[in-house]
Image 1: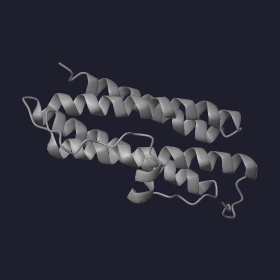
Image 2: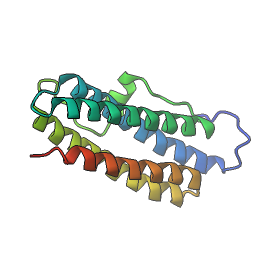
Image 3: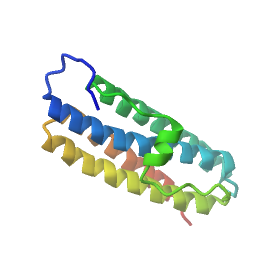
Image 4: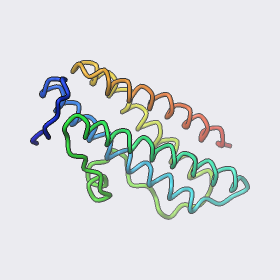
Length: 159
């Protein structure tokens, strides 16, 4: 992939490695964002309103993370590949089940997806540091804290 021209002083090989790392996380973040929205639309049960509102908040948070990842990727000279089709092909998450509505099924499925993405983001912190891109490492560090908090909030609804 050809880098776009930029005066960013991070070496081009480091920028390319960071772009690849960011692109991989972008695909999974888009998938997770849409999975949370699926849960928001379809959840049913005694805790409906609490989960409906929580899932909407998580979706909004994920939308911010998607934007941050894509903008960092482009700032480094990359080309964000953020279509739903691209995300579906490249995401590391299993497909979100479209036939569930039970609150506990959504809580369990989303908890697993959040934990998986959180693990990938923590790994990306170290990878970004190894290539000398502390800016990307910092982006992933903040995202990791947020994902851990969101996971805690979703898991608090397990019965």
